[in-house]
Amino acid sequence: MRFVLTPVGSGGDVHPYVGIGRELRRRGHDVVLLAAAPFRGLAEAAGLTFRAVGTEEDYRRGLEDPDLWHPRRGLGLVLNVVGAHLRESYDAIERLHVPGRTVLVGHALAFATRCFEETHGVPSATLHLAPSIFRSEHEQPHVAPGFDPTPWPRFLKRGLWRLVDRFFIDPSIAPALNAFRAELGLPPVRRVFHDWMHSPNRVIALFPDWFGRPQPDWPPQTRLAGFPLWDAAEQHDLEPALEAFLDAGEPPVAFTPGTGNAQAPGFFRTAVESAAGSGRRALLLTPFRGQVPRDLPSSARHVPYAPFSLLLPRCAALVHHG
Image (cartoon, rainbow, N blue to C red; front, side, top):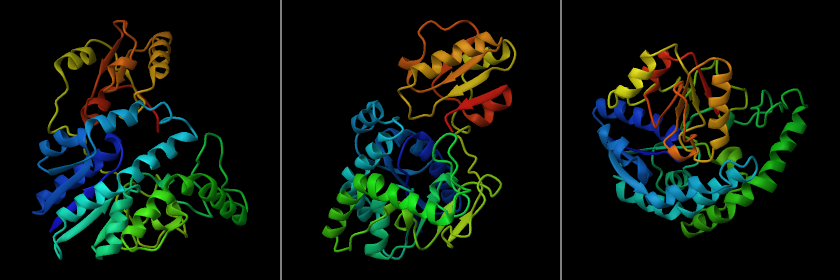
């Protein structure tokens, strides 16, 4: 079979799909990763066929947009980018589709994949990386720090999600999505994040139940598969300079705001200061060197990437954006 994997986002979104693709390839399947252009090297090093959506410049421009990490405008920006690439993504899937021999594996935001599933009746699954993507009238995801609507009456929680859909999410994606669906002869959709984003065939949650307990109103086709613990350790050893730093003193505290965050100079400045103030060493992880303080003390070091399976056993703690 040919599996077409369609992650959307930065390294944290793409890495699990590459790990799953490697396992599918090991089992004898043809695997194609359809993702942003900068992930070509990662995919090909893992033995996967790669097809790019957008250009390196498109990806960099999105990461550098000051709205990306804004608490209200960030998701709208991401959805606008998804809408702008619907046709390109759909056409790429169409070129890769082999009737009767293709399975689609889509990200929560892979809306072109969902449309193709509808137009061609292709076996498909939606992969969700975190429990926060699931809505429920029971236990709710914490969508903002300190805000937990779980104790609210169920009718209030239903109303909350309707308001979020009507005034925030649907205005950001539904016009572009429904215009594209009209081209395909598909009916319009509303409340895109409520039901439609989940494949009716299968939803696979990439976490264990202790991390996100399934709720009675989650899609019944959902299956929990646990964390996909793959991090390219087979392709990357720890750098000699990093090995030397780890060997030179007490285990450091590792700090990362995420692989797609190019706008976190305050995070790294505070990381260095707080580690030094507590007598700890600091390891700063980001592919964007420009946001790291220029003159680091000897107790701190920056690396663009390190496999967590090799790194974290040698760290005292991990401070991250999750």
